[in-house]
Each structure stands twice: as C-alpha cells, then as structure tokens.
Length: 225
Ligand code: DC
Image (cartoon, rainbow, N blue to C red; front, side, top):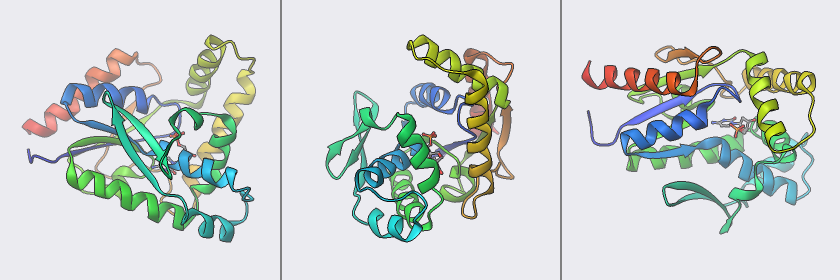
C-alpha cells in the first residue's frame, strides 16, 4: 500500500461514523478527520454573523471570511475558526441546523473540500463525511458507506440525550433525522450517496465491536487483495 493512503467513510448522521472512524484510525495508526466538524465551524461563523440560513448569496459572501483549519491535541481533532478553537461550541442543535442548511452552498463546499483534499495529500487518514468517497477523495484506497435505519439512529440519539439528562422525544428525533437525510440526499451539489466502489455496511443490528471488526476486515482485504 502507498505511504499516504485514505479510508473514506460516508453515511447519514447517527450511523456511527465518527465512533467507528476514530477507533479505526487508532488501529491503523493514522489521523482521523471529521469533515462534519468543518461544516459545523462554518455554520457557527455564519450564525455569529447573523446570516439568514435561506440567503445563499449572503452565505457565499460571508464564508470567504471564515478561515477554518484543524489541529490535533493528544490525537484528537480540534477545529479552529479564525484562530479560535471552537470544538466545544459546534455540537448544539442550532449549529446542526445551520450546518445542514449552509452545507448545500457551493462556495462553502468548494472551500472545505479543498482543505480536506490538501490534508489527504499530506497524510494517511480516515476521513468521514457525506461526500468523501464520491467527491473529496474519489481515489481513496478504501471506501465504506455506513448506514442504519432511521428508527435505530433515532433511538441511539435518544439514548445519548437521555444519558445527558436532556428532555427529548423519540418521535420528534426520528422526524428530524428523516428530514435531514432528505436534505443531505437530495441537495444539488455533492448529495449523500454511496460511491459505486464503496462497501455498504448496515449497522442497524450490529454492536460497535461488530462494526469495528467488520471494517478492519474490509481494510485488510483491500490492503492484502
Ligand atoms: O456529520 P455532522 O452531523 O457533524 O455534519 C454536519 C452537517 O454537515 C450535516 O448537515 C451534513 C454536512 N456535511 C456535509 O454536507 N458534507 C460532509 N462531508 C460532512 C458533513
């Protein structure tokens, strides 16, 4: 295998991409790049700027001012927005909603895709997102499309929120997931879809350990085969 190799993991929100991508990158001894965090940092900038999520011209103009980069602290990705570490500020529902809307913008995507491609040129990595295998790294050595039913993804999210002591409703969470999937899958630019040469893994009935073992098997097959 070449020295700089890439593993691309795509799929809808809640399929377990980041958990699995993190553990896989550790096992492979390479960095893990979470591209959703970049879209979230951009969304935070747009929210702070008071941009209307439906105003695509304003989003195109404002996104030029946002300098987004990543750094690693103890192997954990940190997202920097104009020099400020915003990693702790991007996991809110408000940022999620704005990221889902602003990530349909062509200028936002062009800017972040360029950053992602530059990272992959320099270093071996596991990168996760929605368009990694299709657009960002079409020549990735390994491509995986990780999914799970909306009911299972909603239940996972519900359990996560409950564990944090947050009040939530399973039906609303699933409706929100279905709406977001629809937006991600039907947008004009880089919609979420399985690359032709990606391996499909449905995690609905799998434990984290089972998914980890399955992915390691896929990577080993590609390396050896
Ligand atoms: O994976 P996430 O929930 O952190 O992603 C946040 C938003 O960014 C989500 O609406 C999908 C979008 N996104 C994208 O369009 N392309 C990517 N490569 C990663 C995320």
